[in-house]
Each structure stands twice: as structure tokens, then as C-alpha cells.
Image 1 (cartoon, rainbow, N blue to C red):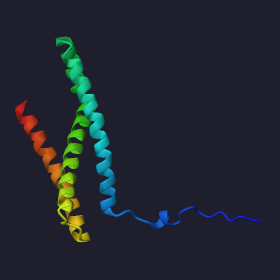
Image 2 (image 1 turned 90 degrees about the vertical axis):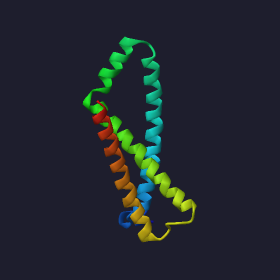
Image 3 (image 1 turned 30 degrees about the horizontal axis):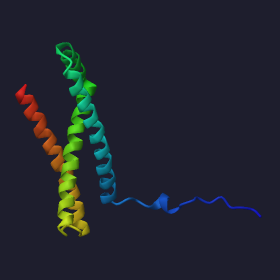
Image 4 (image 1 turned 180 degrees about the vertical axis):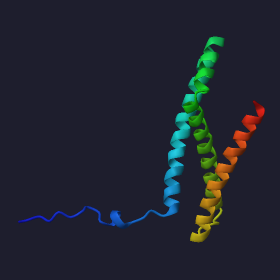
Length: 128
């Protein structure tokens, strides 16, 4: 008996995830990223308590451009996660289940997280 070679799931080749699904997966990924970032933050606090030389070495690491970009990505992840959580509070209240409104809230939370990150960056730059 000859067996035909067919794709396992042909719907995966034509199916496009809705924007809400993509943002939901991103929300979960930022949650994991924030948990890892929190562990790194606690480790850096433990290193800092070892004295002035540890502080200087930690400061030289943090001032590296790649580390600085990673820190600001973490700040964006924090604001994105927070804005998405606010949208979930609206859903818990029974609001915002209409598709056009869902997409509007997604765009709003993406812009809000970018704006909040930019404001934080400005505060840091003005403070230094």
C-alpha cells in the first residue's frame, strides 16, 4: 500500500494568528523575561554589598552599550507587561471584547508602553 506524503497540518500554512494571540504570547514572554531580569537584579544587589571595588566593577559592566540596551529592553518589557495587565483588568470587568475595540486596545497598549519607556529614559537622562 503506497502512502501519500501530505503535510501534517495544512491549516498551519494558511492560518494567520490574530493580533490578540500574538500580543498574548508576547505578554507571556515578557513575563518570563522580567522574572529572569529580577533574578539578575537580585544577584547584582548581592554583588554590590561586597564593597566599593564590587560597585566599580558592576558600574563598568552596566555602562557597556549592549548591557544598557538590554536594560532598556527590560524597562520596555516591564511597561508592556503592565499595560497588557491593565487591558486584562478591563476584560475582567467585562469590557472590550468587540474585535475592533480589542485591536484598538492592543495598539493603545503598544504606544503607551513605548511612551512610558521614553519618559523613563528622559527622566534618567535629565537626572544624570
